[in-house]
Length: 256
Image 1 (tube, rainbow, N blue to C red):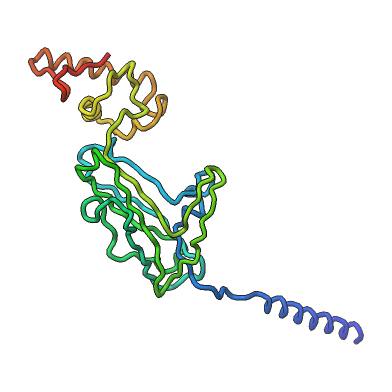
Image 2 (image 1 turned 30 degrees about the horizontal axis):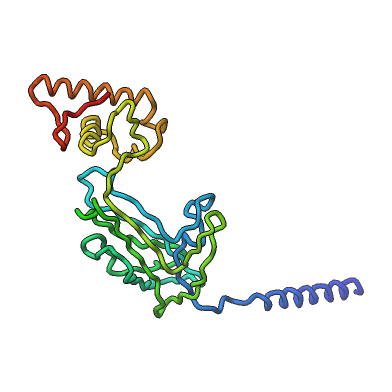
């Protein structure tokens, strides 16, 4: 009987202890904050630097490509929801890109039900003036009935010492074509846009491949040598048949 009494006391004490432990756990009571995820979490979750801006160029894209979809991740600090919640996004007046000419945004931007992370899809349009000018699009997250933007504190990237914003994102883009790092001049000669796209078109090469360094897949010395020999034969055959290929400046196209 005494043993049963002792066990009962221990059991009641255990219940009281667990009850106290449960009472100490408090539910999240703050507002739900919306912010650009890449300023807090690395894009690949491992080694990529934190960013609040980025950029790209259409320069190495096939001329048939007229637009790109650029996805910017957003994240919520707070409660998840079982319904879609609208996100308020505005274009900062410092932007040089023009909506409808250089970019377009979705009519409705939402954090989908059950999601902690979602994306904003920006459609970047390939406009003619991008060949000579770079344009910037600055986006601001703002408060609405669903989200606050209390995470405005700027942090310092430990790698670059750059200050960043959680609620402001800058995207820069252009269509300037310059000699890519994978263009090996000793084998391919002086770089020109006409020569580059002609070669890619004839051999069904992805122009963006040349954004890699020499030695990358598709850019080994034997492969580059093949490109060189192929184009030499092509240009010689065209010249022999009376269809000499010229550069835009009137000079005859050639490969070393």
